[in-house]
Image (cartoon, rainbow over all chains, first blue to last red; front, side, top):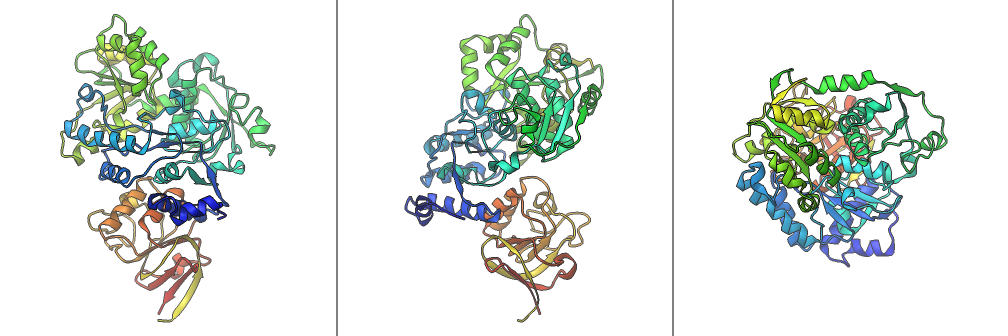
Length: 420
Length: 138
């Protein structure tokens, strides 16, 4: 791999052993994939080193103590607990205490304490065409596709990229790999695509068909940023999609031709209402007219306007006894929502605005409590408006599920039943 | 020892190591296919089920499964239960490459011959990743 003089000096230890080690790992990584050189990053989204993984917090603390400092703007992903308001989710104190250690370690390293899966909605939007390294599949696909910021699925090496500001030029950093591979023409009435869950269902359907390829999705009008977020999160859940194009909408595809970079487009595949119906049917395992005990909104984390809408929809309503109702967001958005009175309105109805975490990353995940010798919270049936969450709770929480629109989630929360 | 057969391989992680081959005919996942406590293969259907990976040269077609596999590999290293070297027939994926680099296990891929058919479990083999060479020893 061709390194600049500065990069060679970093590798040789001129900027300390932590930087030298990080460069050594990145160079080996790049050489394994024939990367010609390293690129300079504009941004990193860093794993929060959750307490649900053994040794992860201790490792983060130790790394910070070695003097590691990030050198590009870097935000942090979700934690396993709402460390600002730990009591509202009933998270065991032992887990909160362990997780809280990460906050100090990240601060020491210069990482912005966002603890969210949606840093883009907090204003971390580098220039279109710049290079980045992110964790969190729903953010990765959004940065790549909607913002035109180039990132692979960052894994363990996000740490070394943040420390050096470098990443090997490979994968989705390269033009050649950003070309569309599949063409979908969505033939679904616009009226059907006016709620968040419908975009999730669309993403679930297409993701299952394309696996890790690059779908070009035509014939849709995603007029809300959260619709693109929900669809992307679902594409990265049923498949491992890292990049999609919507002709006329996303920045690298003004036209269908541009989405395929001038190459011949493949035969288009039509998506119909029946395909969406099949997703709802597959993701809904709660029997009609049976009780539910968990309602979840905010996967990925809800933005301020979504919180405002929930507050409005909950006015005058009361969550049924025995139902947990979480609305998940990040701490900055919750702070603003408190200023605006949305949090108070949601809490008045008996729901909780939870920051920093989500059910499958938290103590609600069955294996987490088992690993820590803590009692496993019982959940029988969850109703949710997110395709991604619904897909994961079945395995990670072990409950029945229903995918539906937000209004129906709220109705289920107040009645305590799934009406079907 | 003299080499009775030799393959060209593509380096992923630097280094060299020698050990008994463990040849798995199907794709392999560190998460789920290996017991973290003993380092033994536990996957049903794997002909090497019950065999420990410690100090072996693990050979398989491609990595499957969760990104947690890279963390499992690191954990095996910490416990002294990891293989001495790894060879995959197909190109490596990002996740396992990261795990192998951090674990400092010599790792190579894309051999130029039918290693799955020709190398037998229990044979001594030597991987020199830097030289791009896998030798079957006699």
